Amino acid sequence: MFGAYQVGAWKVLSQHFQPDMVIGASIGSLNAWMVACGATPEALEQHWLAESGMERPVFQFPRRWHQGILDPTYAHHTMRRMCTEGQRKLRVGIVLRRFPNLLHRTVIQDDNVTWKHLAASCAIPAVFDLPLIDGIRYADGGLLDPLPLFAARDMGATQIIGINCLSWGGFGNIPNAAQLRPAKRISLRPSRALQWNRQRVEQWIAMGERDATQFRNDPTHRRLLT
Image (cartoon, rainbow, N blue to C red; front, side, top):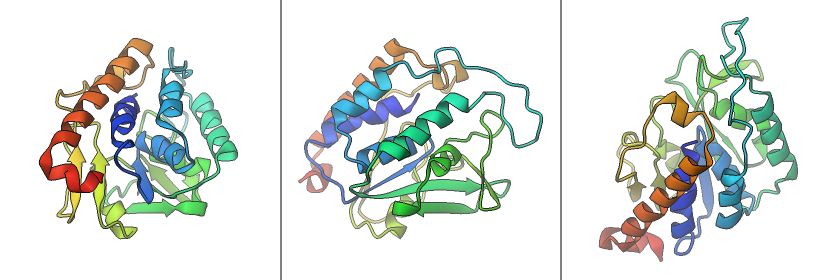
């Protein structure tokens, strides 16, 4: 559910900044895909405020090592629909981690992105199923680094604004990169991170808006928002 924070931040930043490309990892991959397909901040907000199918997660008993404890059926259906209905207008990059060698990172770009890549980028080991794509098993793209700024650099971005839902990450010396993080730490408790709750989503959207407003008003960031 951390993606709700990104939505609130984007509602503010989108008024001052129009990207040439959008990159996402973990839950941010879904927001990145929707933005790349032209979704307005209002449409993103409505997507997160709508009942997500995760109000009461469906548990499953993993029968194989690559399966998780949550049934991914509803989430995968949503991702299929997003990729079927979405028409990409901006460049997009989706970050994945190979499993079990999480140090091996992969960025799937533009027309190569499928719903399976979105599913893989969100696949927390032991929680969600780890998809097999072209013979390679993938896991959550935000593992080890929830804000993989390297992906923007490698795709040729010269000015980068990263929206980080967490209080850590964004490693590496990436020139001309600015990070927006929560002023107040978001709880990592599974009951908050994985279970949809409208009131909590509204709170996190509002938090993203407040932090993005402060970010926008910081003189050091104005050159990126013009």
